[in-house]
Length: 215
Length: 215
Image (cartoon, rainbow over all chains, first blue to last red; front, top):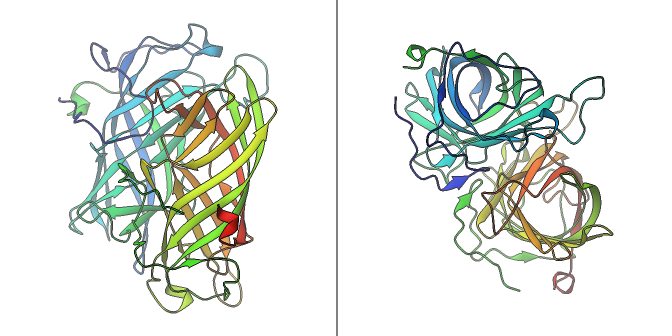
């Protein structure tokens, strides 16, 4: 399995070192309230995205697939002060819609999709340790062969997970922070009008996958 | 007054032609429910931004200044179907905080800050014409001389105005769609940890300014 890492021209956050970082698969133990050593998390993901095509309609499509996320060394050993930086180094989700056909979502290699896990500035009140907030700014390609287009976003899709009590936040629900509409452009004509919009995106991080489940 | 337009490496939306487009100043008449001819709107703006500096504190700073926005030809003559594309070609806002000192916000010339005005896919129900939604993805530089830093955002700040009944939406309140925190990086060390975060941003578009008010 290769890691497609051409030099991106758009960097949405902090780059994270990948060299020598171990791949983590099914069977990896996760400790709550603990900032783990660097790793590449190979995780399942599911998502329900709504696309609006101007003058045509809105279509809600369920997706299933996987992501590979490299995590940095935590900035502190204790949970409360630990920040972890992340890069999405691979993504592959597939969905199907009667109108839009088969859709495959992968990373846009022109963008470094980057994020972090840290304690929010308005943490949840309550007893015990504070949950963290996870965010990732993503540049994607939506391949829609039935329509003969590859769509890209030119502003990142901000994926967020709240109430993070373990790293990685496997099993947690998350949201794409789309305000009304996020434009998608034809990769061949990125300066033209948007072809479609993402109007809603909800996802759930899955657990660790086996090596075989990623191929 | 010059228009600083070095070739940006990051393009957050659709580029809009500036050549030959007239500057519009104080005295320009605005018609509601009407998509006007292309123009460069020279408008006042005020904003209240909250910055969080990890381990130091949160600071809310009021800003005043101006923006220059170039608008495209509308895609249709009638209001309902007209979409208008916009680029922020200049911005200058100043604020002051006892802790952070003087702050000046300008455009990051490395980014093309771009947006659009269109009917949302979930328009307001009601009688009469539909209000439009305005959005702009912005790359900015926050100069903080007291702290000796220039901070940049590496994912765009999404500025939105709802209930747009005229173009430009002068006088309308707007919001920066910041989910919990938007990282700001030192322009000299953009790959390092964020130095600060924007945690809240609310703004109000002002009216047309005179030529003199922009200098």
